[in-house]
Image (cartoon, rainbow, N blue to C red):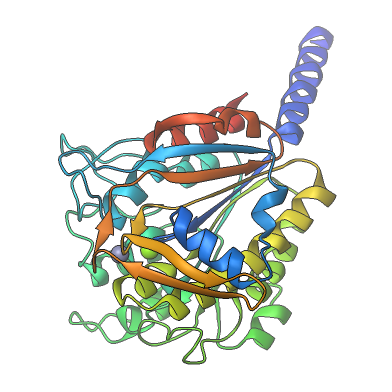
Length: 348
Ligand code: MG
Ligand code: ZN
């Protein structure tokens, strides 16, 4: 009996030690943020970006299962679950099999999880981390899947998909383990274990049209809440609208959205440096707009760009990494490898 107790103490100590060593993972996705979008934002902001402080840099191949040019659903699924799938599909592979996401695998390991986006929370990129649907446009179904999930904290638009539904369900009422907050003030002061903050009824507006609260502020508040949980966490933060600026072929839109994202990366990096056990990955799902920069003035922070398409392009996108296991992200690899590398960081 005494031996059994000793064995139990020994194994539980071992178990606790491994748990303590599991790093926080913060995956930051600039939707449509290729190298030219980063360059444009950098030149416009006194030739600086916080990305210069990252330790390792790689390149990611973004094509989907059958298309050279991916969409955000297929590339979000690739990074979230490690498989290439068809454009428009979320969380299901090309053989029609539901795949667990890195967020879900982290939760199984005792992690907390958070999703922040400047689009709606049911949009393709955040949905890739919790939903399994044949079409990214099944917003109401995606909202149901979030309501049945155990993401601890989420922030994004799209409230109408929860409360103004064709089936007349009110998912906010159904999600009774969550506190839903309606302002940054309420979010800041909430002490609930699970928090939902649906920032807009529809898709949030662009920053130039007055979107609030700022992503960097939401991120800082979320980091505070997550680190108070005393367990490791997985967090995905999306700068969603860099992509929308690209689709609109509006460079000012791209630069303003990138700038907010850059400020957010700065806050995350400050947290990671102080914490010492946080892996930060910053990348894109694809480039949007086929942007080239062909003129400008560095001193005036002016950049002139030309867009080659109103859609996405197939060019590789950069991957910046910082913290424990960040060296895994050097090199050239498929976007699916981002999942593999994150999982390795969690499991080893
Ligand atoms: Mg997106
Ligand atoms: Zn797009």
